[in-house]
Amino acid sequence: MNLRKKVFTAFLAFIVVPLFVLGVITYTVSQHIIEENFAEQSEFTLKAVGRNITYMLKEANYFSEAHMLQQDVQAALKEKETVDWIELAEYNRLLQRTFLSYPPVYSAVLYNLRGQGFGDGKIGHKLISFEELIRHPVYEEVKRLNGLSKWIGPHELPELTGDGRLFTQIRIVNDKYTIDNKGILVQQLQFQELDKIFNFFGTGPRKEIRFMIVDGSGVVMVDNMKLLDGSVIFEQTDGKFDLSAGYDSGKMTFGGVESVVSVHHLELRDLGSMNWTLVSVTPWAALSGTTVLLLKWIAAITAFCLLCALLFNLLFVHRNIRFILRVVSSMKRAEIGDLDIRVQTRATDETAVLARGFNSLVSRIGALLEEVKLEQRRKTKAELMVLQAQIKPHFLFNTLESINALAAQNEGRKVSQLVQRLGTILRISFSQREEIPISMELDHLRNYLQIQSYRFEKLFDYEIDVPAELASYSILKLTLQPLVENSIQHGFDRMEQGGLIRVRAEEQGDSIVWFVEDNGAGMADGTLSRFRYKTPEPVPGTGSAAGSVKPDEERVGLGLPNVADRTRIHYGSRYGLFICSEEGKGTIIRLTIPKYEAG
Image (tube, rainbow, N blue to C red; front, side):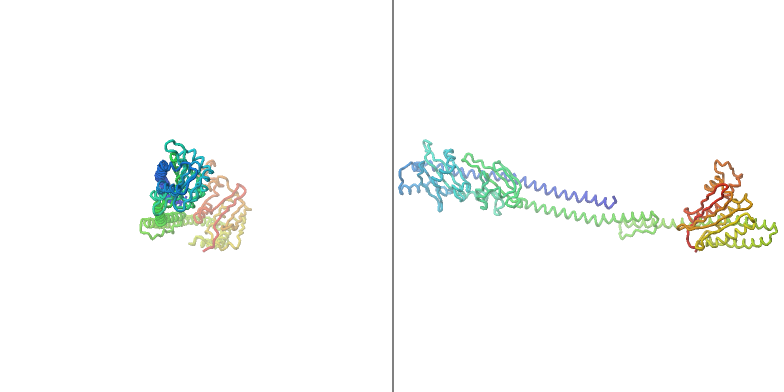
Protein backbone atom coordinates (compact mmCIF):
# COMPACT_ATOMS: atom_id res chain seq x y z
CA MET A 1 0.00 0.00 0.00
CA ASN A 2 1.47 3.35 -1.04
CA LEU A 3 1.72 6.41 1.20
CA ARG A 4 -1.36 8.14 -0.19
CA LYS A 5 -3.59 5.14 0.51
CA LYS A 6 -2.10 4.72 3.98
CA VAL A 7 -2.77 8.36 4.91
CA PHE A 8 -6.29 8.25 3.44
CA THR A 9 -7.02 5.04 5.35
CA ALA A 10 -5.69 6.62 8.54
CA PHE A 11 -7.82 9.72 7.85
CA LEU A 12 -10.93 7.55 7.55
CA ALA A 13 -10.03 5.36 10.54
CA PHE A 14 -8.96 8.06 13.00
CA ILE A 15 -11.01 11.11 11.96
CA VAL A 16 -14.07 10.34 9.83
CA VAL A 17 -15.13 7.10 11.51
CA PRO A 18 -14.69 8.40 15.11
CA LEU A 19 -16.70 11.54 14.30
CA PHE A 20 -19.41 9.48 12.66
CA VAL A 21 -19.49 6.99 15.55
CA LEU A 22 -19.57 9.89 18.01
CA GLY A 23 -22.57 11.36 16.20
CA VAL A 24 -24.41 8.02 16.14
CA ILE A 25 -23.66 7.32 19.81
CA THR A 26 -24.72 10.84 20.80
CA TYR A 27 -27.98 10.50 18.90
CA THR A 28 -28.73 7.03 20.27
CA VAL A 29 -27.85 7.91 23.86
CA SER A 30 -29.83 11.13 23.75
CA GLN A 31 -32.87 9.30 22.39
CA HIS A 32 -32.55 6.69 25.12
CA ILE A 33 -32.13 9.33 27.83
CA ILE A 34 -35.16 11.27 26.58
CA GLU A 35 -37.28 8.14 26.51
CA GLU A 36 -36.06 6.98 29.91
CA ASN A 37 -36.51 10.37 31.57
CA PHE A 38 -39.92 10.84 30.02
CA ALA A 39 -40.96 7.36 31.15
CA GLU A 40 -40.19 8.33 34.76
CA GLN A 41 -41.96 11.66 34.41
CA SER A 42 -44.91 10.05 32.63
CA GLU A 43 -45.31 7.46 35.37
CA PHE A 44 -45.37 10.19 37.98
CA THR A 45 -47.88 12.20 35.92
CA LEU A 46 -50.21 9.29 35.21
CA LYS A 47 -50.25 8.26 38.85
CA ALA A 48 -51.04 11.83 39.85
CA VAL A 49 -53.84 12.00 37.27
CA GLY A 50 -55.11 8.61 38.46
CA ARG A 51 -55.20 9.84 42.05
CA ASN A 52 -57.22 12.89 40.99
CA ILE A 53 -59.68 10.69 39.10
CA THR A 54 -59.93 8.46 42.17
CA TYR A 55 -60.66 11.49 44.37
CA MET A 56 -63.27 12.65 41.86
CA LEU A 57 -65.08 9.29 41.93
CA LYS A 58 -64.78 9.03 45.70
CA GLU A 59 -66.40 12.42 46.01
CA ALA A 60 -69.24 11.36 43.71
CA ASN A 61 -69.70 8.19 45.77
CA TYR A 62 -69.70 10.20 48.98
CA PHE A 63 -72.41 12.60 47.83
CA SER A 64 -74.63 9.87 46.36
CA GLU A 65 -74.34 7.82 49.55
CA ALA A 66 -75.07 10.84 51.75
CA HIS A 67 -78.13 11.71 49.72
CA MET A 68 -79.42 8.11 49.74
CA LEU A 69 -79.36 8.02 53.51
CA GLN A 70 -81.52 11.12 53.92
CA GLN A 71 -84.86 10.39 55.60
CA ASP A 72 -87.04 11.86 52.86
CA VAL A 73 -85.17 9.87 50.15
CA GLN A 74 -85.58 6.68 52.18
CA ALA A 75 -89.30 7.46 52.58
CA ALA A 76 -89.74 8.16 48.87
CA LEU A 77 -88.66 4.60 48.05
CA LYS A 78 -91.57 3.01 49.92
CA GLU A 79 -93.72 0.88 47.70
CA LYS A 80 -97.13 2.45 46.89
CA GLU A 81 -100.08 1.39 44.89
CA THR A 82 -100.29 4.64 43.04
CA VAL A 83 -98.40 7.91 42.88
CA ASP A 84 -100.34 11.09 41.97
CA TRP A 85 -98.84 14.02 40.16
CA ILE A 86 -98.54 16.04 43.33
CA GLU A 87 -96.33 13.41 44.93
CA LEU A 88 -94.35 13.09 41.69
CA ALA A 89 -93.66 16.84 41.69
CA GLU A 90 -92.59 16.60 45.30
CA TYR A 91 -90.20 13.77 44.47
CA ASN A 92 -88.68 15.81 41.67
CA ARG A 93 -88.11 18.72 44.04
CA LEU A 94 -86.54 16.18 46.40
CA LEU A 95 -84.08 15.19 43.66
CA GLN A 96 -83.33 18.83 43.00
CA ARG A 97 -82.50 19.42 46.66
CA THR A 98 -80.38 16.30 47.01
CA PHE A 99 -78.77 14.52 44.08
CA LEU A 100 -78.97 17.29 41.50
CA SER A 101 -77.49 19.79 43.92
CA TYR A 102 -74.08 18.13 43.27
CA PRO A 103 -72.82 19.99 40.15
CA PRO A 104 -71.42 17.01 38.19
CA VAL A 105 -74.79 15.18 38.29
CA TYR A 106 -76.51 15.50 34.93
CA SER A 107 -79.54 13.31 35.75
CA ALA A 108 -80.73 11.08 38.58
CA VAL A 109 -83.48 8.48 38.90
CA LEU A 110 -84.65 6.41 41.90
CA TYR A 111 -86.49 3.11 41.59
CA ASN A 112 -88.01 1.00 44.35
CA LEU A 113 -87.85 -2.75 44.07
CA ARG A 114 -91.22 -2.84 42.29
CA GLY A 115 -89.90 -0.64 39.52
CA GLN A 116 -91.74 2.45 40.61
CA GLY A 117 -89.53 5.47 40.34
CA PHE A 118 -89.02 9.10 39.61
CA GLY A 119 -86.20 11.06 38.12
CA ASP A 120 -85.05 14.47 36.91
CA GLY A 121 -82.06 16.09 35.27
CA LYS A 122 -80.63 18.91 33.25
CA ILE A 123 -82.01 19.99 29.92
CA GLY A 124 -81.75 17.23 27.34
CA HIS A 125 -81.29 14.44 29.83
CA LYS A 126 -82.53 10.93 29.14
CA LEU A 127 -83.41 8.59 31.95
CA ILE A 128 -82.66 4.87 31.93
CA SER A 129 -85.92 2.95 32.35
CA PHE A 130 -86.23 0.23 34.96
CA GLU A 131 -87.18 -2.31 32.30
CA GLU A 132 -83.99 -1.61 30.31
CA LEU A 133 -81.95 -1.86 33.45
CA ILE A 134 -83.20 -5.19 34.71
CA ARG A 135 -82.91 -6.75 31.25
CA HIS A 136 -79.26 -5.81 30.96
CA PRO A 137 -76.58 -8.17 32.38
CA VAL A 138 -75.14 -5.29 34.37
CA TYR A 139 -78.15 -5.47 36.69
CA GLU A 140 -76.96 -8.78 38.17
CA GLU A 141 -73.55 -7.25 38.85
CA VAL A 142 -75.21 -4.27 40.57
CA LYS A 143 -77.13 -6.63 42.85
CA ARG A 144 -73.97 -8.56 43.61
CA LEU A 145 -72.20 -5.37 44.67
CA ASN A 146 -75.03 -4.81 47.17
CA GLY A 147 -74.62 -1.08 47.69
CA LEU A 148 -71.22 -0.46 46.09
CA SER A 149 -71.25 1.66 42.97
CA LYS A 150 -71.13 0.22 39.50
CA TRP A 151 -69.50 2.84 37.29
CA ILE A 152 -70.03 2.75 33.55
CA GLY A 153 -67.90 5.05 31.47
CA PRO A 154 -68.91 6.91 28.32
CA HIS A 155 -69.24 4.60 25.27
CA GLU A 156 -68.58 1.58 27.49
CA LEU A 157 -72.18 0.28 27.33
CA PRO A 158 -73.82 2.59 24.78
CA GLU A 159 -76.89 0.34 24.48
CA LEU A 160 -77.68 1.19 28.09
CA THR A 161 -76.17 4.61 28.79
CA GLY A 162 -76.26 6.20 25.33
CA ASP A 163 -73.49 7.84 23.30
CA GLY A 164 -72.94 10.95 25.40
CA ARG A 165 -69.80 11.86 27.37
CA LEU A 166 -71.51 10.92 30.65
CA PHE A 167 -70.37 8.64 33.44
CA THR A 168 -73.14 6.42 34.79
CA GLN A 169 -73.33 5.35 38.43
CA ILE A 170 -75.69 2.52 39.39
CA ARG A 171 -75.98 1.31 42.97
CA ILE A 172 -78.41 -0.44 45.34
CA VAL A 173 -80.05 1.85 47.91
CA ASN A 174 -80.00 0.17 51.32
CA ASP A 175 -82.28 0.86 54.25
CA LYS A 176 -80.61 3.25 56.64
CA TYR A 177 -81.32 1.08 59.67
CA THR A 178 -81.79 -2.51 58.49
CA ILE A 179 -79.36 -2.44 55.52
CA ASP A 180 -82.08 -4.11 53.46
CA ASN A 181 -82.35 -3.28 49.78
CA LYS A 182 -84.91 -0.57 49.20
CA GLY A 183 -84.28 0.53 45.61
CA ILE A 184 -81.83 1.43 42.87
CA LEU A 185 -80.13 4.75 42.15
CA VAL A 186 -79.07 5.57 38.61
CA GLN A 187 -77.01 8.74 38.15
CA GLN A 188 -75.32 10.16 35.07
CA LEU A 189 -72.54 12.60 35.76
CA GLN A 190 -70.65 15.04 33.56
CA PHE A 191 -67.15 15.39 35.03
CA GLN A 192 -65.91 18.66 33.62
CA GLU A 193 -63.22 18.41 36.24
CA LEU A 194 -61.46 15.90 33.98
CA ASP A 195 -60.49 18.59 31.49
CA LYS A 196 -59.02 20.67 34.29
CA ILE A 197 -57.05 17.67 35.54
CA PHE A 198 -55.71 16.86 32.08
CA ASN A 199 -54.78 20.47 31.38
CA PHE A 200 -53.05 20.82 34.72
CA PHE A 201 -50.90 17.73 34.20
CA GLY A 202 -49.07 18.58 31.05
CA THR A 203 -51.22 19.41 28.10
CA GLY A 204 -50.81 23.17 28.38
CA PRO A 205 -51.77 25.57 25.61
CA ARG A 206 -50.05 23.50 22.91
CA LYS A 207 -52.08 20.37 23.73
CA GLU A 208 -49.00 18.19 23.35
CA ILE A 209 -49.93 15.34 25.72
CA ARG A 210 -53.06 13.39 25.01
CA PHE A 211 -54.90 11.69 27.91
CA MET A 212 -57.46 8.93 27.43
CA ILE A 213 -59.45 6.68 29.74
CA VAL A 214 -60.11 3.26 28.19
CA ASP A 215 -61.96 0.23 29.44
CA GLY A 216 -60.64 -3.33 29.62
CA SER A 217 -61.44 -4.07 25.97
CA GLY A 218 -59.63 -0.98 24.71
CA VAL A 219 -62.65 1.23 24.02
CA VAL A 220 -61.78 4.90 24.49
CA MET A 221 -64.28 6.31 27.01
CA VAL A 222 -62.72 9.76 27.35
CA ASP A 223 -60.29 11.51 24.98
CA ASN A 224 -59.31 14.95 26.14
CA MET A 225 -58.94 15.95 22.47
CA LYS A 226 -62.45 14.56 21.80
CA LEU A 227 -61.34 12.78 18.61
CA LEU A 228 -61.23 9.10 19.53
CA ASP A 229 -64.27 8.83 21.83
CA GLY A 230 -65.89 5.43 21.32
CA SER A 231 -63.12 4.00 19.13
CA VAL A 232 -60.77 1.11 19.96
CA ILE A 233 -57.32 2.35 20.94
CA PHE A 234 -55.47 -0.61 19.42
CA GLU A 235 -56.60 0.52 15.95
CA GLN A 236 -54.45 3.66 16.30
CA THR A 237 -51.09 2.07 17.08
CA ASP A 238 -48.67 -0.40 15.52
CA GLY A 239 -47.41 -1.53 18.91
CA LYS A 240 -48.83 -3.62 21.74
CA PHE A 241 -49.20 -2.67 25.36
CA ASP A 242 -50.85 -4.29 28.38
CA LEU A 243 -53.88 -2.40 29.67
CA SER A 244 -53.83 -4.37 32.90
CA ALA A 245 -50.20 -3.48 33.71
CA GLY A 246 -49.54 -1.25 36.67
CA TYR A 247 -47.41 0.97 34.41
CA ASP A 248 -45.96 0.52 30.96
CA SER A 249 -44.38 2.87 28.44
CA GLY A 250 -42.92 2.51 24.98
CA LYS A 251 -42.09 4.26 21.75
CA MET A 252 -44.43 3.42 18.88
CA THR A 253 -46.52 4.94 16.12
CA PHE A 254 -49.89 6.30 17.27
CA GLY A 255 -52.28 7.69 14.71
CA GLY A 256 -49.49 7.73 12.15
CA VAL A 257 -47.23 9.85 14.37
CA GLU A 258 -44.16 8.56 16.21
CA SER A 259 -45.08 8.87 19.88
CA VAL A 260 -44.43 7.63 23.38
CA VAL A 261 -47.47 5.73 24.71
CA SER A 262 -47.75 5.25 28.49
CA VAL A 263 -50.44 3.27 30.31
CA HIS A 264 -51.41 3.19 33.99
CA HIS A 265 -54.08 0.84 35.27
CA LEU A 266 -56.39 2.62 37.73
CA GLU A 267 -56.85 0.87 41.09
CA LEU A 268 -60.59 1.51 41.69
CA ARG A 269 -61.67 -1.69 43.42
CA ASP A 270 -62.74 0.20 46.57
CA LEU A 271 -65.02 2.43 44.50
CA GLY A 272 -66.90 -0.31 42.67
CA SER A 273 -66.50 -2.68 39.78
CA MET A 274 -64.34 -0.96 37.15
CA ASN A 275 -61.54 -2.01 34.79
CA TRP A 276 -60.25 1.31 33.56
CA THR A 277 -56.83 2.31 32.34
CA LEU A 278 -55.37 5.77 31.92
CA VAL A 279 -53.38 6.24 28.68
CA SER A 280 -51.15 9.16 27.71
CA VAL A 281 -49.82 9.74 24.19
CA THR A 282 -46.99 12.23 23.64
CA PRO A 283 -45.61 12.95 20.15
CA TRP A 284 -41.89 12.21 20.00
CA ALA A 285 -41.28 15.53 18.25
CA ALA A 286 -42.73 17.36 21.26
CA LEU A 287 -40.44 15.42 23.60
CA SER A 288 -37.27 15.74 21.57
CA GLY A 289 -37.87 19.24 20.22
CA THR A 290 -35.08 20.94 22.16
CA THR A 291 -32.89 17.87 22.02
CA VAL A 292 -33.41 17.53 18.26
CA LEU A 293 -32.32 21.13 17.89
CA LEU A 294 -29.25 20.32 19.98
CA LEU A 295 -28.61 17.21 17.89
CA LYS A 296 -28.94 19.27 14.72
CA TRP A 297 -26.31 21.63 16.07
CA ILE A 298 -24.11 18.67 16.96
CA ALA A 299 -24.64 17.23 13.48
CA ALA A 300 -23.83 20.59 11.91
CA ILE A 301 -20.70 20.96 14.05
CA THR A 302 -19.69 17.37 13.21
CA ALA A 303 -20.23 18.02 9.51
CA PHE A 304 -18.22 21.22 9.79
CA CYS A 305 -15.42 19.33 11.55
CA LEU A 306 -15.49 16.66 8.83
CA LEU A 307 -15.36 19.37 6.17
CA CYS A 308 -12.43 21.05 7.92
CA ALA A 309 -10.68 17.68 8.23
CA LEU A 310 -11.32 16.98 4.56
CA LEU A 311 -10.01 20.41 3.55
CA PHE A 312 -7.00 19.88 5.79
CA ASN A 313 -6.41 16.52 4.12
CA LEU A 314 -6.79 17.96 0.62
CA LEU A 315 -4.98 21.28 1.06
CA PHE A 316 -2.18 20.25 3.38
CA VAL A 317 -1.71 16.50 3.83
CA HIS A 318 -2.58 15.61 0.24
CA ARG A 319 -0.34 18.38 -1.12
CA ASN A 320 2.62 17.23 0.97
CA ILE A 321 1.99 13.57 0.12
CA ARG A 322 1.77 14.47 -3.57
CA PHE A 323 5.08 16.33 -3.24
CA ILE A 324 6.68 13.36 -1.45
CA LEU A 325 5.39 10.96 -4.12
CA ARG A 326 6.75 13.28 -6.81
CA VAL A 327 10.14 13.28 -5.09
CA VAL A 328 10.01 9.46 -4.79
CA SER A 329 9.13 9.17 -8.49
CA SER A 330 11.99 11.49 -9.37
CA MET A 331 14.34 9.45 -7.18
CA LYS A 332 13.30 6.26 -8.98
CA ARG A 333 13.94 7.89 -12.36
CA ALA A 334 17.30 9.15 -11.12
CA GLU A 335 18.03 5.65 -9.85
CA ILE A 336 17.63 4.18 -13.33
CA GLY A 337 19.94 6.82 -14.79
CA ASP A 338 17.73 9.82 -15.70
CA LEU A 339 19.85 12.53 -14.10
CA ASP A 340 18.08 15.32 -16.01
CA ILE A 341 15.02 14.96 -13.76
CA ARG A 342 14.24 17.92 -11.49
CA VAL A 343 11.58 18.45 -8.82
CA GLN A 344 9.64 21.67 -9.44
CA THR A 345 7.89 23.42 -6.54
CA ARG A 346 6.51 26.88 -5.80
CA ALA A 347 6.39 26.41 -2.06
CA THR A 348 8.47 28.46 0.35
CA ASP A 349 8.52 26.02 3.24
CA GLU A 350 10.71 23.02 4.00
CA THR A 351 9.44 21.21 0.89
CA ALA A 352 11.20 23.83 -1.23
CA VAL A 353 14.43 23.17 0.71
CA LEU A 354 13.98 19.44 0.08
CA ALA A 355 13.34 20.02 -3.64
CA ARG A 356 16.38 22.27 -3.98
CA GLY A 357 18.51 19.74 -2.10
CA PHE A 358 17.33 16.91 -4.35
CA ASN A 359 17.88 18.95 -7.51
CA SER A 360 21.34 19.99 -6.32
CA LEU A 361 22.22 16.39 -5.43
CA VAL A 362 21.08 15.04 -8.82
CA SER A 363 22.87 17.86 -10.62
CA ARG A 364 26.06 17.15 -8.69
CA ILE A 365 25.77 13.41 -9.36
CA GLY A 366 25.24 14.15 -13.05
CA ALA A 367 28.32 16.37 -13.13
CA LEU A 368 30.39 13.76 -11.31
CA LEU A 369 29.10 11.05 -13.64
CA GLU A 370 30.05 13.13 -16.67
CA GLU A 371 33.49 13.59 -15.17
CA VAL A 372 33.73 9.82 -14.63
CA LYS A 373 32.56 9.17 -18.20
CA LEU A 374 35.06 11.68 -19.57
CA GLU A 375 37.80 10.13 -17.49
CA GLN A 376 36.72 6.66 -18.61
CA ARG A 377 36.74 7.76 -22.25
CA ARG A 378 40.23 9.16 -21.76
CA LYS A 379 41.32 5.96 -20.09
CA THR A 380 39.75 3.85 -22.85
CA LYS A 381 41.38 5.96 -25.50
CA ALA A 382 44.71 5.63 -23.70
CA GLU A 383 44.25 1.84 -23.52
CA LEU A 384 43.41 1.70 -27.21
CA MET A 385 46.42 3.81 -28.03
CA VAL A 386 48.60 1.45 -26.00
CA LEU A 387 47.11 -1.52 -27.80
CA GLN A 388 47.55 0.22 -31.13
CA ALA A 389 51.14 0.94 -30.18
CA GLN A 390 51.58 -2.76 -29.40
CA ILE A 391 50.11 -4.03 -32.67
CA LYS A 392 51.86 -1.58 -35.03
CA PRO A 393 55.50 -2.48 -34.28
CA HIS A 394 54.57 -6.14 -34.00
CA PHE A 395 53.00 -6.12 -37.44
CA LEU A 396 55.79 -3.99 -38.87
CA PHE A 397 58.42 -6.34 -37.46
CA ASN A 398 56.77 -9.40 -39.06
CA THR A 399 56.40 -7.63 -42.42
CA LEU A 400 59.98 -6.40 -42.48
CA GLU A 401 61.07 -9.90 -41.59
CA SER A 402 59.24 -11.14 -44.70
CA ILE A 403 60.86 -8.46 -46.90
CA ASN A 404 64.25 -9.35 -45.48
CA ALA A 405 63.69 -13.00 -46.34
CA LEU A 406 62.79 -12.12 -49.96
CA ALA A 407 65.76 -9.77 -50.25
CA ALA A 408 68.03 -12.57 -49.08
CA GLN A 409 66.60 -14.67 -51.92
CA ASN A 410 67.34 -11.89 -54.47
CA GLU A 411 63.63 -11.48 -55.26
CA GLY A 412 63.90 -7.79 -56.17
CA ARG A 413 60.58 -7.57 -57.99
CA LYS A 414 58.76 -9.20 -55.12
CA VAL A 415 60.57 -6.94 -52.65
CA SER A 416 59.37 -3.91 -54.63
CA GLN A 417 55.79 -5.15 -54.62
CA LEU A 418 56.03 -5.90 -50.91
CA VAL A 419 57.37 -2.43 -50.14
CA GLN A 420 54.54 -0.89 -52.17
CA ARG A 421 51.93 -2.93 -50.35
CA LEU A 422 53.61 -2.21 -47.02
CA GLY A 423 53.33 1.50 -47.71
CA THR A 424 49.58 1.09 -48.33
CA ILE A 425 49.24 -0.87 -45.11
CA LEU A 426 51.21 1.69 -43.11
CA ARG A 427 49.06 4.57 -44.36
CA ILE A 428 46.02 2.77 -42.95
CA SER A 429 47.57 1.55 -39.74
CA PHE A 430 49.17 4.86 -38.83
CA SER A 431 46.09 6.97 -39.55
CA GLN A 432 44.51 8.83 -36.62
CA ARG A 433 41.07 7.28 -37.11
CA GLU A 434 40.13 4.45 -34.77
CA GLU A 435 37.32 3.14 -36.97
CA ILE A 436 37.36 2.72 -40.73
CA PRO A 437 34.89 1.30 -43.29
CA ILE A 438 34.89 -2.46 -43.76
CA SER A 439 35.96 -1.95 -47.36
CA MET A 440 39.18 -0.23 -46.22
CA GLU A 441 39.83 -2.93 -43.62
CA LEU A 442 39.42 -5.57 -46.33
CA ASP A 443 41.94 -3.72 -48.58
CA HIS A 444 44.36 -3.69 -45.68
CA LEU A 445 43.74 -7.44 -45.15
CA ARG A 446 44.30 -8.28 -48.84
CA ASN A 447 47.56 -6.33 -48.93
CA TYR A 448 48.74 -8.16 -45.84
CA LEU A 449 47.78 -11.57 -47.28
CA GLN A 450 49.62 -10.73 -50.51
CA ILE A 451 52.72 -9.84 -48.54
CA GLN A 452 52.53 -13.10 -46.59
CA SER A 453 51.88 -15.14 -49.73
CA TYR A 454 55.16 -13.79 -51.20
CA ARG A 455 57.01 -14.85 -48.08
CA PHE A 456 55.31 -18.25 -47.67
CA GLU A 457 54.85 -19.19 -51.27
CA LYS A 458 52.56 -22.21 -51.80
CA LEU A 459 52.04 -22.47 -48.04
CA PHE A 460 48.41 -21.34 -48.04
CA ASP A 461 45.54 -19.98 -50.09
CA TYR A 462 42.85 -17.62 -48.87
CA GLU A 463 39.20 -16.77 -49.57
CA ILE A 464 37.37 -13.57 -48.60
CA ASP A 465 33.57 -13.77 -48.72
CA VAL A 466 32.00 -10.55 -47.47
CA PRO A 467 28.63 -9.26 -48.81
CA ALA A 468 29.00 -6.00 -50.74
CA GLU A 469 26.23 -4.34 -48.66
CA LEU A 470 28.46 -4.51 -45.57
CA ALA A 471 31.26 -2.49 -47.16
CA SER A 472 30.07 0.86 -45.79
CA TYR A 473 29.69 -0.30 -42.19
CA SER A 474 32.30 0.55 -39.57
CA ILE A 475 34.96 -1.65 -38.01
CA LEU A 476 37.85 -1.01 -35.64
CA LYS A 477 41.00 -0.80 -37.79
CA LEU A 478 43.62 -3.59 -37.62
CA THR A 479 40.97 -6.09 -36.46
CA LEU A 480 41.06 -8.80 -39.13
CA GLN A 481 44.80 -8.78 -39.89
CA PRO A 482 45.92 -10.07 -36.41
CA LEU A 483 43.38 -12.93 -36.69
CA VAL A 484 44.70 -14.00 -40.08
CA GLU A 485 48.27 -13.53 -38.88
CA ASN A 486 47.54 -15.96 -36.03
CA SER A 487 46.56 -18.64 -38.55
CA ILE A 488 49.65 -18.07 -40.71
CA GLN A 489 52.20 -17.80 -37.91
CA HIS A 490 50.88 -20.58 -35.69
CA GLY A 491 48.26 -22.63 -37.57
CA PHE A 492 50.45 -23.43 -40.54
CA ASP A 493 53.71 -23.59 -38.57
CA ARG A 494 54.21 -27.30 -39.18
CA MET A 495 52.81 -27.38 -42.71
CA GLU A 496 54.67 -26.98 -45.99
CA GLN A 497 51.66 -26.51 -48.24
CA GLY A 498 47.87 -26.98 -48.46
CA GLY A 499 46.86 -24.32 -45.90
CA LEU A 500 43.54 -22.50 -46.40
CA ILE A 501 42.28 -19.36 -44.74
CA ARG A 502 38.64 -18.40 -45.22
CA VAL A 503 37.35 -14.97 -44.08
CA ARG A 504 33.62 -14.37 -44.25
CA ALA A 505 31.01 -12.12 -42.65
CA GLU A 506 27.24 -12.16 -42.17
CA GLU A 507 24.54 -9.99 -40.61
CA GLN A 508 22.80 -11.18 -37.48
CA GLY A 509 20.25 -8.63 -36.26
CA ASP A 510 22.02 -5.47 -35.20
CA SER A 511 25.45 -7.16 -35.31
CA ILE A 512 28.01 -8.24 -37.87
CA VAL A 513 29.65 -11.62 -37.22
CA TRP A 514 33.04 -12.39 -38.73
CA PHE A 515 34.45 -15.88 -39.14
CA VAL A 516 38.16 -16.54 -39.69
CA GLU A 517 38.70 -20.24 -40.38
CA ASP A 518 41.85 -22.24 -41.08
CA ASN A 519 42.71 -25.91 -41.53
CA GLY A 520 45.90 -25.64 -39.53
CA ALA A 521 47.22 -27.44 -36.47
CA GLY A 522 44.49 -26.21 -34.13
CA MET A 523 44.91 -25.41 -30.46
CA ALA A 524 45.40 -27.55 -27.40
CA ASP A 525 42.97 -27.28 -24.48
CA GLY A 526 45.61 -25.59 -22.36
CA THR A 527 46.14 -22.88 -24.98
CA LEU A 528 42.38 -22.19 -25.18
CA SER A 529 42.17 -22.04 -21.37
CA ARG A 530 45.07 -19.64 -21.22
CA PHE A 531 43.30 -17.39 -23.71
CA ARG A 532 40.05 -17.61 -21.77
CA TYR A 533 41.62 -16.58 -18.45
CA LYS A 534 44.15 -14.19 -20.10
CA THR A 535 47.10 -15.45 -18.04
CA PRO A 536 50.60 -15.74 -19.43
CA GLU A 537 51.31 -18.43 -16.89
CA PRO A 538 50.49 -22.02 -17.73
CA VAL A 539 47.12 -23.29 -16.64
CA PRO A 540 47.34 -25.56 -13.58
CA GLY A 541 47.52 -29.15 -14.63
CA THR A 542 49.01 -28.48 -18.09
CA GLY A 543 52.58 -29.11 -16.97
CA SER A 544 53.95 -25.97 -18.68
CA ALA A 545 56.03 -23.35 -16.96
CA ALA A 546 56.85 -19.77 -17.86
CA GLY A 547 59.68 -19.57 -20.32
CA SER A 548 59.12 -23.16 -21.57
CA VAL A 549 55.83 -22.76 -23.46
CA LYS A 550 55.20 -25.39 -26.10
CA PRO A 551 54.81 -24.30 -29.69
CA ASP A 552 51.07 -25.04 -29.84
CA GLU A 553 50.56 -22.93 -26.73
CA GLU A 554 52.26 -19.98 -28.42
CA ARG A 555 49.31 -19.72 -30.84
CA VAL A 556 47.67 -17.21 -28.55
CA GLY A 557 50.61 -14.84 -29.09
CA LEU A 558 49.92 -11.09 -29.00
CA GLY A 559 47.34 -10.68 -31.78
CA LEU A 560 44.33 -12.53 -30.41
CA PRO A 561 44.36 -11.01 -26.88
CA ASN A 562 44.97 -7.59 -28.43
CA VAL A 563 41.94 -7.83 -30.73
CA ALA A 564 39.79 -9.27 -27.92
CA ASP A 565 40.73 -6.45 -25.53
CA ARG A 566 40.28 -3.68 -28.09
CA THR A 567 36.86 -5.03 -29.12
CA ARG A 568 35.68 -5.30 -25.53
CA ILE A 569 36.95 -1.86 -24.56
CA HIS A 570 35.61 -0.11 -27.63
CA TYR A 571 32.24 -1.83 -28.11
CA GLY A 572 31.42 -3.18 -24.69
CA SER A 573 31.11 -6.59 -23.05
CA ARG A 574 28.38 -7.79 -25.46
CA TYR A 575 30.94 -8.04 -28.24
CA GLY A 576 34.25 -9.89 -28.65
CA LEU A 577 35.99 -13.09 -29.71
CA PHE A 578 34.98 -16.71 -29.49
CA ILE A 579 37.46 -19.46 -30.50
CA CYS A 580 36.48 -22.97 -31.46
CA SER A 581 39.46 -25.24 -32.09
CA GLU A 582 40.52 -28.84 -31.86
CA GLU A 583 44.11 -29.97 -32.06
CA GLY A 584 44.94 -31.24 -35.56
CA LYS A 585 41.63 -30.13 -37.08
CA GLY A 586 41.95 -26.37 -37.49
CA THR A 587 40.54 -23.31 -35.81
CA ILE A 588 37.46 -21.13 -36.22
CA ILE A 589 37.54 -17.62 -34.71
CA ARG A 590 34.21 -15.80 -34.42
CA LEU A 591 34.24 -12.03 -33.93
CA THR A 592 31.05 -10.10 -33.20
CA ILE A 593 30.87 -6.31 -33.63
CA PRO A 594 27.93 -3.86 -33.74
CA LYS A 595 26.48 -2.87 -37.09
CA TYR A 596 26.44 0.86 -37.86
CA GLU A 597 27.52 3.11 -40.70
CA ALA A 598 31.07 4.49 -40.70
CA GLY A 599 31.24 8.17 -39.77
